[in-house]
Length: 230
Image (cartoon, rainbow, N blue to C red):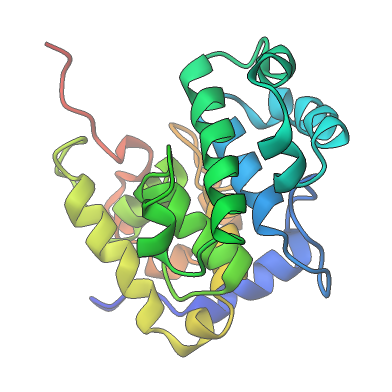
């Protein structure tokens, strides 16, 4: 084991064989639509993939483009959002669509995306990486968990978030990751969702097991730690 993060190549090779087929995910050679990617990220906040799948398809059937969403009345958007919770997300979604149309399309950089209503650092990074192949690492719970285990970072969440984000960003120093930022980001998501899972990770199946400090220290299932609730 070394102090550096592992090579991106094994993860990308694993992703090419085992990527999840998701309705918002473009297949190899398909055009990546920032509207669909952004919509999926907003829907997936506090909502499971299983729940979002059919609702995502239904929402797209009603609002197939960002222009259609921007032109819709709020009552229509609210009706379609019913059951997905947190109506503030839907209001931001609608406002963001209007802002995107007004400016002629989605910004193609993280800072520009951050200026849109309701888009935070994670969503901006996810759209930038997946839709526009910019060399950034969107850090969600899956990426935090993978990073914490690879580096055996025992500092508890949420205090450890800045450190985990910094460590995850270092993946983009790898030429293989920089060559395929969107695929690399989605590979990290899939690794965390299917192999490097909470409590019971399938370490024997992990393409990075030789480089995982937490595995070699016998603490993989314990990470990331969380601060006790007050």
